[in-house]
Image (tube, rainbow, N blue to C red; front, side, top):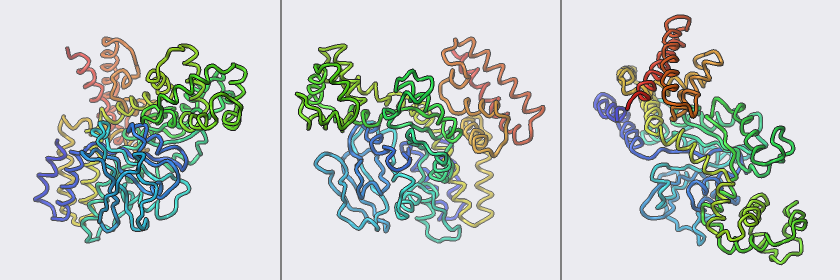
Length: 499
């Protein structure tokens, strides 16, 4: 990779301290993309982490672990490592249920974070970082999160090589931000604060998406245009939240983390399916009454034991129970496996995964490279040597001038526009965000589903328009962005025309 080669070439031209940091940058470039899951307290972050991983491993109840940053990464042997602030490590076994122990048995004030290694296929391509909830954290939890994610600013004159290097390169490269229907006006500021130095860059449509979790708790009747249906209501609310959080996120998608976790992590069993089949035989009027509230559902006299109903509630909540019963009544012979798939579809998790693949996975190398360049710049700046800073700056400019580095230029332009560093008319800003935030050609061109000839013609037309704008009418800063967008459209046109 070009950035890795740049680090290798510069190693002999910088101080040993900076060179050591470059080695860490190279290591990170070779590692899976790191995605931090952030959000306010009780937004269901850990439940969503479990669903994404496909294993109920992150503790969801309040305990010591929920106050710590936990990195879930691929390993050949399942284990949990407690990493202390002095660098020492202690290996712990997983709890009997396969999750991280709620209580660690150590002095938590001396713990930096947790490292969980899992033999999990998902984690081969993505490291997931579970973070404490924002909004009600103790100062120590905030500090630990900032230190690990790179938000802490180091003294440029510090001689502590390890801390300088770690904080320059330890930030996650991408962010999955979790909101609920009670999104607050300052969620955008909270997202910005959380990611102020994520890989030394703020979050934007390049490296951040959001999910509207607990979508099943929405009162559909209060959302105009939903027709009283929860899922359309969730989509409409997610669109409203997207307008609030953009341009810091590429999109907001509704999801029901609890159902997703139960369906994906093995929590939904054949015994649960049998209980739901029993509930499906209950008289319609009685069942409708039971599904009014959790209290009525668990206390009503019914052939299904109250304890079993409580278990269903803990795994699926009322919405999941209703969807499962509807599926059974539509197909009485439905198997437990097929019922699990129905619940998975109802959770919205597949759409989130697809968006993760489009926004993150398909452009992981570009995102990591952009983050690496930011880290390289930060390391050179921290050296305190003007000559070293200039050498690194010049080398980066040479790299970015190469045709193969266009994706980095596009990500840079997108970040400049999204952050407001380059002021663009609203319609043009939206076009820059669209072109730079998608991997799908139709989505990039704003013509999803269009035929290739139409896509090619549109790409060529927009390439010409942006080239003209760059030369006539744009400010110098806008012109720099416009030239990048022009080339993006031209490369899209070439790609479409390739046989």
